[in-house]
Image (cartoon, rainbow, N blue to C red):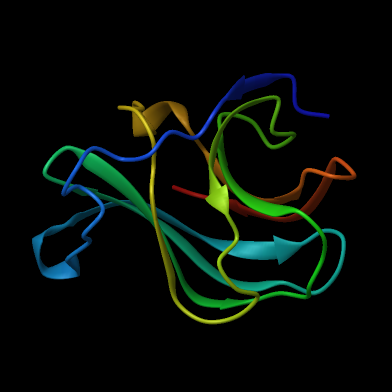
Length: 125
């Protein structure tokens, strides 16, 4: 169960507009379903100092209280709660709150907060 949480905060004004032509890919990885079928790719980008997580393609099953986490470890003990999952399929873009050192983070999770269940995990490299 996650313990060290960095709460999501709204991105700075104007920083929530992602443009892939102006962004640098930092890390990417494939999702593995843990509590049901999930597939797709999680990528982390930097655009003018703001970090973004892009899920594309993405497909999962529905569940209650699903969030996207960026974590330092596979068990999501030390993580940033990036935002509520926007949809169970299709391309999604999330601005990562704060100024994380992305090299310290190795996983993107789809996490059910209500039941503390890791739905899916992508190791990003």
